[in-house]
Image 1: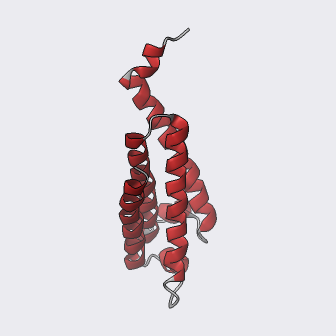
Image 2 (image 1 turned 120 degrees about the horizontal axis):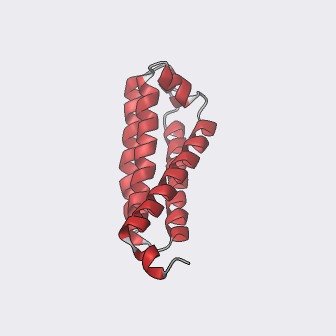
Image 3 (image 1 turned 90 degrees about the vertical axis):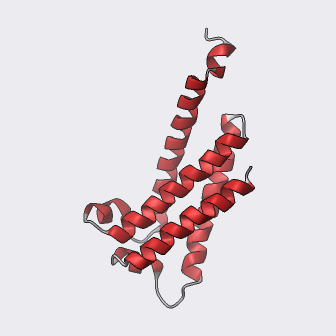
Length: 137
């Protein structure tokens, strides 16, 4: 049986945090795939830079939120809970971005490789991840 010293080892803890963060990033990418009107990975495969920027911003944002969660919480359930709550706030920000830009459709613009919209989407995800991360501390 593994002793408590094993679970306190920084290498073991890092592997655990890494595994949880990767699984949660995969889960969040599935959710983002469901809420966007285009297929992220097909568009990226076609060379759509706007989709790549928007998707990369989401991945960075979620990872950054988990960074703050890992730094400020001790148990895996707390880390996952706060990280997923932060992700929920990023999804909410995505819908607000769409709502506050009534002159054009964000999904359509990104799908059509409008890099300006893709860059703004990336910036919103990254920027808000720092605000969300600081607030879950």
